[in-house]
Length: 360
Image 1 (tube, rainbow, N blue to C red):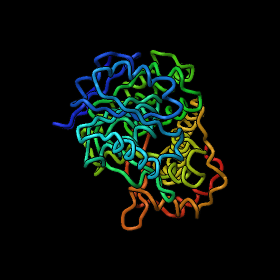
Image 2: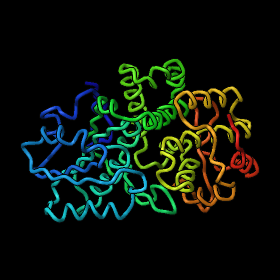
Image 3: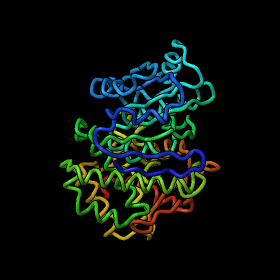
């Protein structure tokens, strides 16, 4: 088992990475401070892994709550259903919430844990590649609003993250590709050596080679943990983790939550960020080509949706956590491995990127 640490002082926690961790008896016991447990999963993941998890929690008073599956259900109404389940038991302020599922389950369960009785412990057990390499690490919890993605939430750290790589065996190809978008992001923003490794090993990742997947999860989590340790609340360097997300969140909201997977929208958003960086004279044509080629090999979209106009993009992008004084700030690239937050880009060049139908 590989163990990484998210170094946040007295709120530090481990990321545990290996196969067959969901069924590991005794693994979670040290992270559950009291007797009550509420496992939150969804209707896709629960039939696959819930019984295996419950078999390891026989020493606890365990309750379960199953959510519908899909980004469109990451909202206040579904969040309120978790609170109803907790209050119906009733669960006290020492209950531990366990999120068993992908990014939606992790985000909404973490937000419920942050709010219930002003904060209760929770554990992340991510079962998708995207959740294992990104959303389960770092304490960002949220729900969506029709006007903007992840605009209602809190920073709230888990007690631990348990990444069972065996759960990827049941992940469909589209979801695997969506996770690879976030993996590629780490190479683009801060780890050019990893980007080169991905270029050499993308076929193995798409083919689900166990060793390649394990390595990419570990290196991605190491990158994420280092950034979060430096900037937990996104006051500085952590904003770089949002490469492509301002464009991508606009795509998700504009096309309707669930129609584009988060990773798909982020992939296209990263290519749009690369395009604007090139138009601005910061990024070379070759680096844009390498970015588009790698995204395409990962099975990700490289063409923005034609349904969204430049004006519509702008309206959606204004509802973004990096907006300051009404101005849209963007994460752009100087090279593969070097990202920066930019607020002085040329508006005309941004319009060209937003209107472009072909980038790569």
